Image (cartoon, rainbow, N blue to C red; front, side):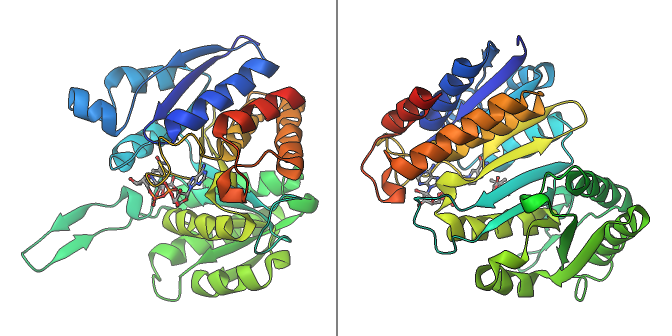
Length: 329
Ligand SMILES: NC(=O)c1ccc[n+]([C@@H]2O[C@H](COP(=O)([O-])OP(=O)(O)OC[C@H]3O[C@@H](n4cnc5c(N)ncnc54)[C@H](O)[C@@H]3O)[C@@H](O)[C@H]2O)c1
Ligand SMILES: CC(C)[C@H](C(=O)O)[C@@H](O)C(=O)O
């Protein structure tokens, strides 16, 4: 292994959890790490939240590990997702043995459209009283996401080797935009013979907590994927456990779903699980499936036996949990 990995801790607990994930990657491989800055602190210092050299480091690297940015998050992570040309954000949410979860049966993977929707829209103040936002949906991006979703389930990458997926949307109201999204996704799945079911996203938000067993892979528009994956985090033990992979044709950016957690930042007690699990996704993206699985097993072992950080009812520090994960490796 000699791949180059760009490492951007960012702000808040990003500075605490990313070093743990780098140590984990270092323990299983021989990577070249290129450190780069982004976020609120670098903006305060230099006037820009995303320096050109950081973007260049991400474009040059084989993969990127990102922590979180604060107020400037949208100015950092959205351009970085596009710097790796990622069209899908994979967000697995599962409960782990030993972790007190609201819904221990939860095992669901969100495949979030990563380029469009309101995130690609233009926001305007048109008067003292009126602000507007446009929403962008193309058949091509929706079809590309659907192709990925089909390949994902065909390759058995979904929970329990599921062979189909759920598509969630609000095409009953946003008939043009979500209608286009829904039609494109369903027609690709039909062409490929992949089974789908559809659910309006408001009903989905009720049904997921009630019947988590009913869902394995969920394909959703960009904003819906953001909100629904956080909802799922609440079912499995919190944001400290949700990793994500922004995947493009050639490059990927891996980040926890959580943000900078200002309420606990600086205390050294953030749960590094989400970021270490993101590093496991990075390893798999680079083709090191066995190492990715080893990391996942180590995290799972520590979650089961402890030590655990306070968000999971323990009293361990980030560093102690990191050391325990590395001991298992
Ligand atoms: N990708 C990103 O960079 C990203 C993502 C989300 C939010 N943000 C930014 O983060 C800042 C804070 O946002 P927020 O408070 O809404 O969301 P958050 O994810 O930072 O925190 C929400 C809650 O979850 C807890 N939490 C999150 N991660 C945790 C971890 N690893 N271990 C233990 N507890 C954890 C926090 O303590 C907090 O109570 C905002 O400025 C927001 O813009 C950035
Ligand atoms: C901070 C924000 C731009 C980001 C998003 O909406 O994608 C965050 O909520 C996330 O889930 O990573």
